Length: 227
Image 1 (cartoon, helix red, strand yellow):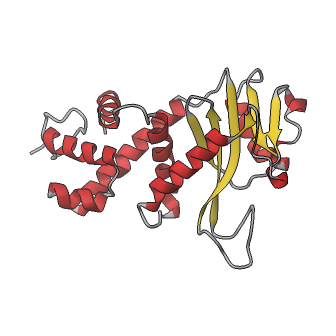
Image 2 (cartoon, helix red, strand yellow):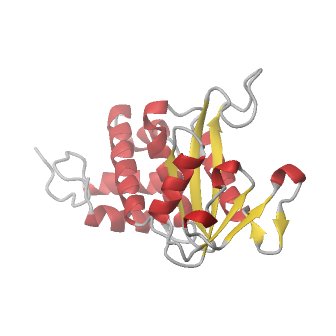
Image 3 (cartoon, helix red, strand yellow):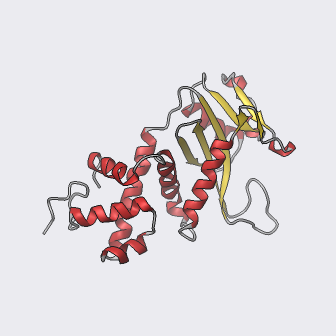
């Protein structure tokens, strides 16, 4: 018999009380396997709920991804094995390239990319960042020519010359998100490639709500957009 009381998870046999338990654990961060053991539900059910929650988080991030004012830091990074013998730097084998944009004192936006070439990165910047926004980047050649396409306020730090901050010229904010995301992902001892983007968006959502009560934010989201 379908439980009608669960307003967060429609057409589900899971009671709202049990579902709230799962959401509370999700907010705290343990993997689905642990939550299944803690709540007494099957591993399959816990995994299904986690997957659907991450889909809702991905949708929520997409609704809040434009940067129209202030200062934005941009950075390309790689997730995956720490070191592959014979492969170094950008494009190292076995790593997943991710492009991130962060508004200072605000939210972050991330996107999986096929490569970190100029055309790829600047297409995302032009689609997400208004021309009047000040952009801070490192010296990667993928950012060459931003001024020519309308971003008159483009400031760079040259990491290859051991320059990591010069007054307000730095990308410390987006690099702090990279560290945050890596810590989050390490808890899973490897994330399958086919749903890595969902885990990445979960990291994005958690970072953007880092000063809020994640459990309450999740309930609010799932009340408006039920599973």
